[in-house]
Image (cartoon, rainbow, N blue to C red):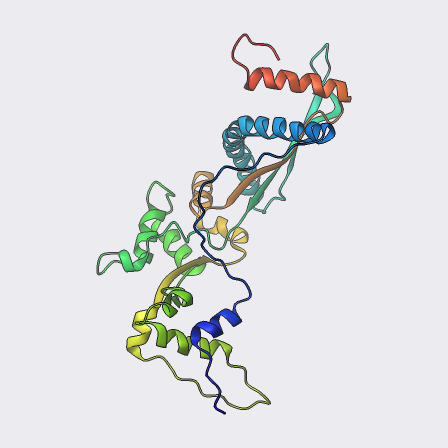
Length: 294
């Protein structure tokens, strides 16, 4: 008895380890369930904290950006002067004496600065060559930017940076998902070939033949995506492309290094009561209207 060959759609369903289905949801009234008194206390605390977080979060983001810029300047100054990549530092603020307001030996507040190099830092900065006018190249656009006031490198250093640190390549990828191809008669046979290739497993070292895509089929379902990467270890070489600290800072920002201020500490040497009172003052300062009291 002849067996029926599974369809491409059946094979795709079987091959997928996970699937995401888009379901249309209708807006409907949600049920309200009761809570015990103890549960109400816990849920109330969460609501209070979540609401407070929502009010504070925009302020935190705003201050992170400003403080991050200041700490970035400290980090780059040490980097440029020492000619060595600094360790990501901690910043500690000492507790002040309540009467003299002079720093004591006790730690009070602090945070960490994290600056990270990203190999894909230029990926979203540069234009796609497919969208450039005929005769223009990505390398030329990058050279223009590096020599412009955005960074300010000399022509010699800019060209050297591009030649030695930047890798621009084309990655081939599917122009559309396989499940979409299967639902379109125009692409179904191509999807079947791709599935056959992906699901083929050689046994005992035997050669397996698969049907290749024609040039016309490749043009239909394959697309080229530009990839721009920076070579690993750039921090160890970056000072060789700049002449002053201003160029250095601008180059780091242009290649989109990650600048993160994190791991905040507050009231490290306070008692619980002292910390709570100080937090009331924080609420007064940042969240309450002028003249209101916490």
